[in-house]
Image 1 (cartoon, helix red, strand yellow):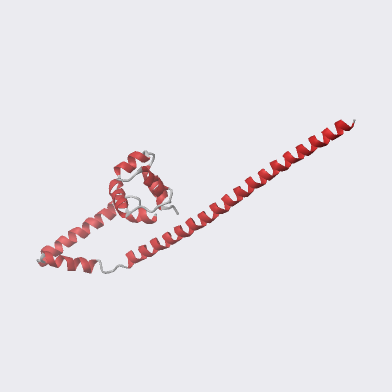
Image 2 (cartoon, rainbow, N blue to C red):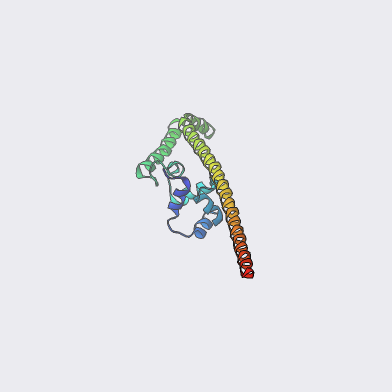
Length: 176
């Protein structure tokens, strides 16, 4: 499955990092970190990206569903708005009562909770991978230091061996 950073890089599609980041109100360095998976983008950036590129939120955040809203999803969203307007007109509901209808329509938060749980799981996985990466980098650094130490010791042994052979050659030459 693609990661969020990979999807952001794919969205940029060859546009320069400087131009893309400037348009979305972040620094090129931040964009590079987002694309590389080193940092999680903040909500404001994600909202600007979704609006700028007309993206489906679920696709951007989770990699699921279509990248761009389809006519079907746009019709459904428009239909919900029309339904709400019709309900308000039909029942002659006051503006203050509108919030109660909204609460009733959004009361089932199981889908949001499921997405939040998946996001938490993904963040936990990312943290584990970052820890593992740091551990592996430390091991590599230690290995490289050990290699340098061994190379230095080898060079010293070779120098000592050359010195001993010159000394031996000098003694042999004076004896003759």
